[in-house]
Image 1 (tube, protein in one colour):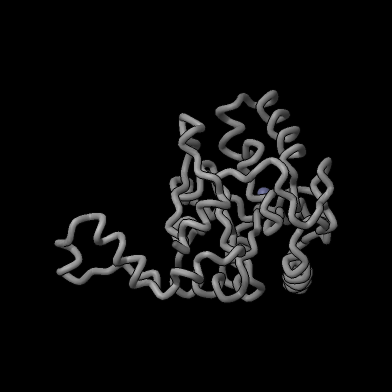
Image 2: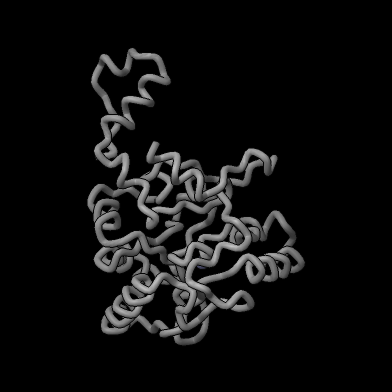
Length: 234
Ligand SMILES: [Zn+2]
């Protein structure tokens, strides 16, 4: 449904016209405005006080508090399924992260590795998908972030059944702004996740046509994630 319009008359139309029609022709115009499709990335930050489910602001909410309740429920089901498949996954996750907590994490990484390196794997405060209340990192029973090809492919083939996607798939840094993180799971609901799976749409940025990739060199070019979402419905 978010198809490119390839008919010849549109190809020849002025650029802005094409854009307009593309959105008009998409029956998903309003659907894409679903709060489940909130895109927070290096160009789209959240307000520092965004905490819709009242997660603890000083930690990573490992038991799922701060997540949208339906996300927490789906998370439990998927972890159970993963365990049944033999993956050593913990009940604990690294879940909702407040602006304050993200700031302390990021500052630590910058101290350890320098800002340039830190930016490849840790979000600056306000730019973290973890602040959406829709995302979490899986943890292994050993307490480490699980990276494993079998788990990666299991998630690619099955996470959608629970409403999840791998938010930062391998090889999609240009789109998402991050190196592959198969442990970082994002809820978008079964309907959208199934669509992405079936149509092989690899990133949330590609589904929503919201820009991603690296940080803007000037912060003033950022667009608030919440207002970008409203824009889609206009
Ligand atoms: Zn994460």
